[in-house]
Image (cartoon, rainbow, N blue to C red; front, side, top):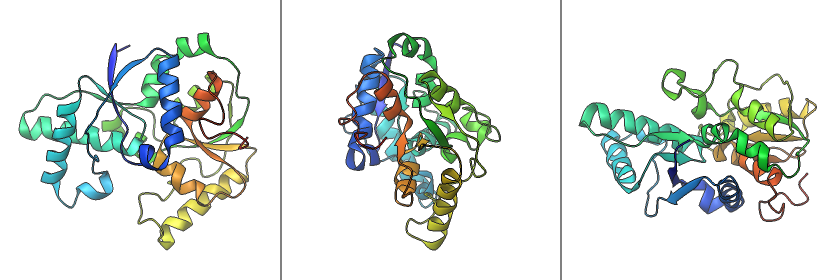
Length: 248
């Protein structure tokens, strides 16, 4: 395991989902994963936007990488995708040598032994997993999991006592990358939520704040949580502090 990470929070987590940030900091602290905040980092300019002005996207993320003191971890899969693509682009086209970028799931997998040793209370929930598109695709670049049969998030849920349920639309997009509020975006989210509701799931779990925000807006029966919130709960965090009091 890497000794020190640079933590890139992105925009949505600190500004809209502070409970996810608290859960993340709790988990990293409990597992004794050392990190430094990337203070002053800008928006990563996510994939839906960087196609409009490639040079701006490159320059902004070159600045972001200049702030990093070590390899970067992200709690947002869209940030992971944009930063990883920027690293590839800048190294290939500009000759830069930049830190690696890892999604949080990779760090949690590497810390599996420590998680088991410090587990306070198994979570014991049935989870419908929303597999983030940006975490999985394009698979030849992301190299995180099999996009046709992803197992990483399910294996991480197993570690903390959760059960992953099978459902029809498990691999479907949440619609968050489509123009938010549009008819298509809503239709995709509703289809995804209905699939989860038709299963035996108690909750919907995702690793991407964009998926969390999108599905929460359309899920009336099932609460939606980030994976790191469940990890924080299993490791002893207060349900209230991580936005889970009364939700499960």
